[in-house]
Amino acid sequence: DVAQLRMESDNACVRLMTLHASKGLEFPIVFLPLMWAHGERDNASLWVVTDPGTGKRQLQGTDAAKQAFLLEQQDERFRVLYVAVTRAIHACHVMALPPDRSAKRGSVATLKGTKRTALDVMMERAGADVLDPELASLTPHIDWVAGWAPDTAVLFQGASKLGSSDRLARPEPASGGGPLPSRHSFSSLNRVHHVAPAVEEASAADESLPASSAHATAHEGSGENPEGMREPHPALKALRVVRGTEFGNAVHAVFENREVGQPIATQGALVRQCLADAGARVPASAADFVPRLAERLDAALAAPLGLQTAAALQLGQVPVGDLCPEMRFNLALGEVNLATLRDACGRHGYGHLIPNNRRIISGFLNGAIDLVFHHEGRFHVLDYKGNDLGDAIEGYEVPALDAAMQAAGYPFQALIYSVAVDRYLRQRLGTSYRRGEHLGECVYLFIRAAGLSPTAGIWRHRFPDALIEDVSTVLDGRVAQREAA
Image 1 (cartoon, rainbow, N blue to C red):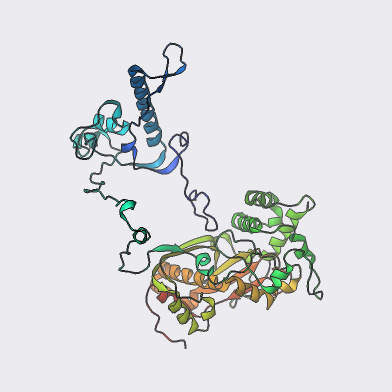
Image 2 (cartoon, rainbow, N blue to C red):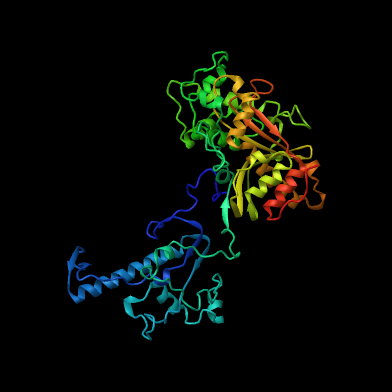
């Protein structure tokens, strides 16, 4: 949970810091691949030393000053090594070389005195042979493993020996000319297909692109109704004072962390905290924004979802045991040509969902589904959307809502989510899995309008079983041969 990767952002996924900066901190796993190289570095002619009598730092150029400086630096390396090996909670992996190794390539001389690293000194004190049974018995919590270092060095050819065309070359992939494995997402694939202007809050748990449609774009900015015939809805108008990615992230956090079974209106502190954590700025003039937002979210939870098998079901009625928020997935991909995927979807009437290019991808397709919930044997996908589609309720009704979905590529996202859940259920349920019985619908809940009318702010769809099968087949790297019925 601490290290959970939030798919909408790369913040804090990887953090680089010096060993000095790590002092006082803890990390689940620590890797120390280069402590064996943390040795003496000295090319100076003057050295800063501490006067033992006064404690003052002085700049000196004598041999004695140099020796004192080098000893002081070696002591510091020991302190850094202590800090390094005591940061781990669960495991610390330290790569070491034999302490009696040659100082330089082609030389038999070994490192001596202060030139040795602190790790070399520690290894020498521990024993020359790390596989010695006696050493292993004295260090029951250390797993000594030999042979991590390569037998031969791999040298890079100098750039001066390469022509300009050679320097731009890339190594051939191991697959024999195919694409290099990589990580892909709905966002990275869809960005090629949809480049509409941003008018929507980015989802806090997926890589969704901003929604856009002629209707939504016309409403952006002034907040006025451009068509003149549509009356602004008070509930929609009240929420338009806060928009942007931060608002979307805050809404997702509220749904993810709410106390299930209790009205969000009674969880005002949570709403305020989520808005603050997401950086959503509420104007001072909108003092009642938090209770209005909580009321709106409760209304969305109470809106009938219109599912084929349970039309009157409300999200707020689903017990906590049937909710799986933030379901992450990593689908292993074969060598996938998007044109082949488009053709496979086209046989079922869904070719328009796939980017129209011949890009080849491989590696992994990853993402995180806002919510997967279970009801009466079926597993449904639900995605929260904070899109601002204007202050008129018609912007959240068909056909305007469907146009916004298509413009943002969300049906493509829903298809990816359906395939991910299908694959997950096949793995968990095994031979008892029946796609027609267990795989439910995809619901996109536009929280600004859901519940304002029987059909406002709710988009739902269930993809045909044969389409799911063919898409999964193509993603596995095989060509779907099945023709649509």
